Length: 411
Image (cartoon, rainbow, N blue to C red; front, side, top):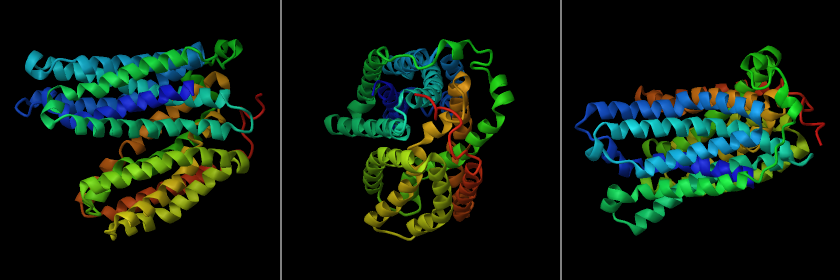
């Protein structure tokens, strides 16, 4: 719980920026200033794509060389500082172009932090879990990841009921960032009680936290993790982040209805994670990954095509839940199936860097590819793109050992 609480806070702070941007954007990026608009674009790009792989490398190296606990404390402190500074930032009217620039810097640090959080937390939770229940334990990483997103939405909904739109734009938007910073302090205190799972021997290894050592001795494992993470991230973002826009732009549901559908679906999806994590402890991670790839390849086109032709919110909810049930086979074990591929001296780096790179290229671009194809009049091509990536997941998952190379014999 101490490890996953920090994960929840990290993702709450990361998502709350996106959800509250509608209210604070005019304070930092006035339409009359094109330079500020460019800084806004650059900030979103850098934080979302550039900083995650850098964070995966930096915090993975710290975790492998200095310990998992040290890395997790640093990442949550960085996220706390970023949220607190954003909450206190003066506006464009007060300090001019320095306001969007400082916001950009804060987002860079938050992108760095959240990029490093995944690999270290996945590694720690896989190492601290009880043998025979590692899938169940590691599933809570996605419980808290989705939970952070839902809490961010809920916070904004409560504020919208308590404050007027004018109050939210004037000062109310700062409240979620203050809450995020306070929650990060609580997570920091909880994480200080964690015990270190990495041995002194592993930290002293010559290849500890080394990208060269990782690629020299574990290139095949790294490429395998890249392969199924690319497909898994694309499928995940298609049916979570992009799906709300798909429901509005393609299915033509009202915005509020689409929000209700996705909030309910995400909540049930969150609850499914421990169930599928426990299932993996019984049938094996390799079997779960093969099922995910196969079902994803078969069901993607029918589900997205059926959604195109439905006008019923209940039917849309059922179809989305079918997709989220399929992806639960992957997300519930996303951390552990990667951690089992690497030895302790490069485990956090291997998990974090492979995840961040694949996630940035395929997951992060999912929405842009889908919308670009739709604008060209070839929306159905995106369905087949996702299907092709699911076929790659199947092929890559065939390379997974029937018994894990690492962690399996640990106590």
